[in-house]
Image (cartoon, rainbow, N blue to C red; front, side):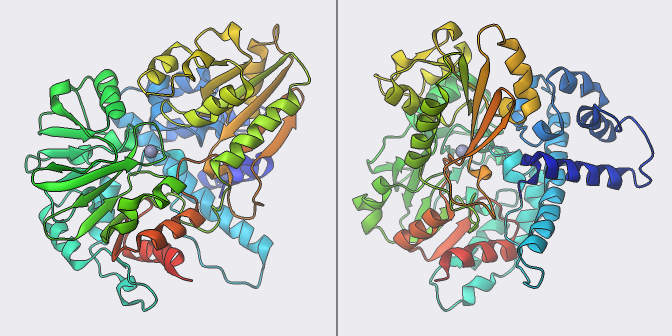
Length: 511
Ligand SMILES: [Zn+2]
């Protein structure tokens, strides 16, 4: 799945792409030393977006870096027009799907030429758009598909069902809103700002990641937004939504909204993220996980332990056995030990990848346990001040880079050795070794041993991929579903329709 991460295999896929797009393989601008950058330019031209060549060249986006770009990165690079940005994200998804298919074929041959393998349900667009799921046009296709009957309904070994007929009836009434954004038995929508409609005035936001708040603008006028205080702060300061449009939800306390009881719990995802238990008058409770990582706190939560959940709307980002990565604690310990091991040279610069919101626990734990300041930059420090981090953490974070040799940087800037070499040259007078950590669950896939990190080195640059995830691993998803024991499950990620959803959930439910 992640062949592009391996430079030699990634290059083979790049060549495959070139051959497909230029079957005669005539000599052209993609031949020669600068093959990868030039091909990004060629790729943009094919999309009719040559006006952005300069931006991609200036930011040194090569073929490998390309796969890491998120919509947020594109915005940060200055691609502010919605149309071109969506076009790029869609094309990246297509490219990645091709790579996944090629990878699966190649890996299958390597594993066993005689063993027929069932292809997993991962659609693959989550890496490219980790926080940015499918476009609304894709969504419409998926919504159409999901109305077909579910084969899982007939399974004997599980009480859970997918996409019930009741849900389908409801779906018919709300044509443009995906199942996983609707709460049956209530007038509520969750993470559905792309589908704003006048027939709803209660909009829940589980957390401040773009694929969940996308569509929300400062002129929001469809009623109230319900979210935690951290998320409300970010919505106000980053988007400009007035406070009187928001209703702050408490944690671990049952409240009533529009006559319906609901309770929010920490989702163990990013700061301010919640899972929400809705208890409508019809007695059919709905648990919406938003994005979450199953934790021991959830397992010990008496409300979750005692509630009978009718419908579970589940974050299925890593719903595939290949994603059985270790706990955050193990990965944090690995990173700390790696920093200690690599720090024999006092002129070493450590880089830790992060998103605008996300992965905070990794670098704050590094700061706390090593008792070292971490440089986060002025803009990120401003955001971190809204996240209600523990008071003792803030003094360890600085916007003065001279104060620290551990720097938090955008994830995509660590995607390739080429980019790291560029960074290295900028710091040449102060550091002579760069050690970069790329934390993502996607670094842990099929055929890889369950290790808390992998290390590569090119000259004076060392690059670690660490499976630090803020989503549940496959094993954790199985445990969570067993713990909740719902009657129906609606996958909220990689839900390509009933067949894909059934296959995904069958893996969760089968013994
Ligand atoms: Zn998220």
